[in-house]
Length: 94
Image 1: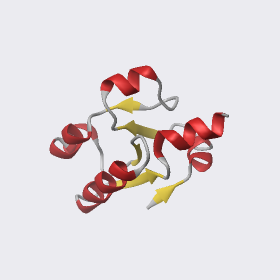
Image 2: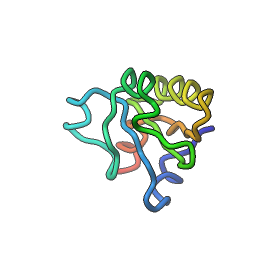
Image 3: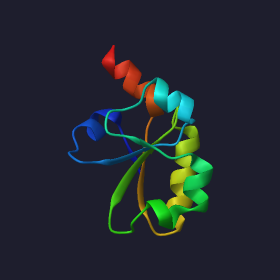
Image 4: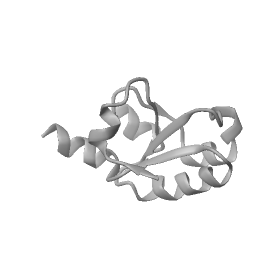
């Protein structure tokens, strides 16, 4: 399951997770996103995720987040990959 940046930005109170490094997140991120390293998210998913909620993951280009989304969906979570990742957000703002 995937979602465009335009559709994501129209969702109120979306659970957005930035799986990039803390440095990249601190440099800039999609408003409302929290930062969880993808290894930590995969290995400790029950600590961060609830199977009753929807989550929207992004990385820099949408490649790593696509893989992580597939893994987490296999665990029973509702996960959407943001197509194009953070770069799609940057392009939208231009």
